[in-house]
Length: 236
Image 1 (tube, rainbow, N blue to C red):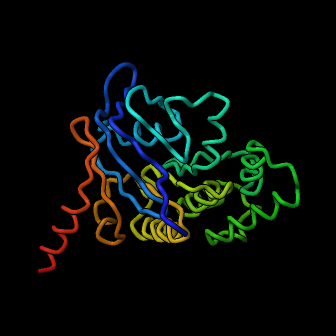
Image 2 (spheres, rainbow, N blue to C red; image 1 turned 180 degrees about the vertical axis):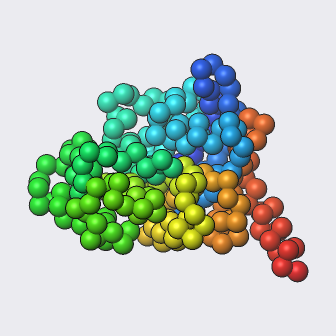
């Protein structure tokens, strides 16, 4: 798959309730990249991610995501953009009153799927991708935290997204389970899907090579080269 630009921000300013969170954001993200998003609580990580799927408006600069101009995006176009972006939440956000299969079916129907056979086939496909193909009949509370997070990743894959945004996907998991989830996200990226992971766990950066972006002092800074340099120095 040829590399193509999926996200491009030029001189973007992002605000929350009239408060500037990030300014002068200049970033280009290509297909198949694995990106870590670092920063303290309140530094703008979630704001940046939410801007990508038009949860938070871009008011200034130029912003393109998956060929959509975010500054000119019409409300009726937002669902089409969001179908191309998979979101993995730290707190799962599964519907607790229905089975895993029913959770996934709900999302597909909400995004326009109608054919029952196609729905069943897609659910089986994504559950198999995350190693949970035998768990579809279970209720969320019958699964461990790691299993629930795998289901959340399966849910994010339902519409074959070009970008996956994972906000602290290992935050509520023990180290081994967290590594399993990171392995899974890293393998998804090999198919050409771009994966952006917001995390506080710096050890993942050594284990999973990728770009490193940091939110600090109202800026989004690419420190990938610095991180690689530090790792080389540590190994020397």
